[in-house]
Image (cartoon, rainbow, N blue to C red):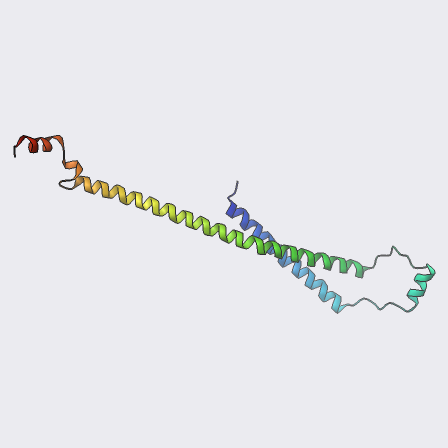
Length: 144
């Protein structure tokens, strides 16, 4: 299983790519709408609609284009919201992991320094390692 940092980065990339693609699609359809406007509605259309000769279930290509454009805009806005939420979360998680790694590294370094200092103190004259039984025996018996 992936770490939370990797999962959040995947979400961030997903939302970013979805936002880019949906925005390109919406802008392309908007440009097509401006470049190729729908034909004007003839003046006889309202009279035909009142007479009942127009098919109410007729689906125009312009309606499909408008539907896809609105869907692309909704997808772009939703993915932008997801990107805005996922980016700070991923950033905070990376920052938290860096801090945790720095603390662990500092503790390991301090442990190593403590072990080296203990070893050096033990090897000094008068250190704990030099106070053996024979050394102490000479002090207590009055010899030396």
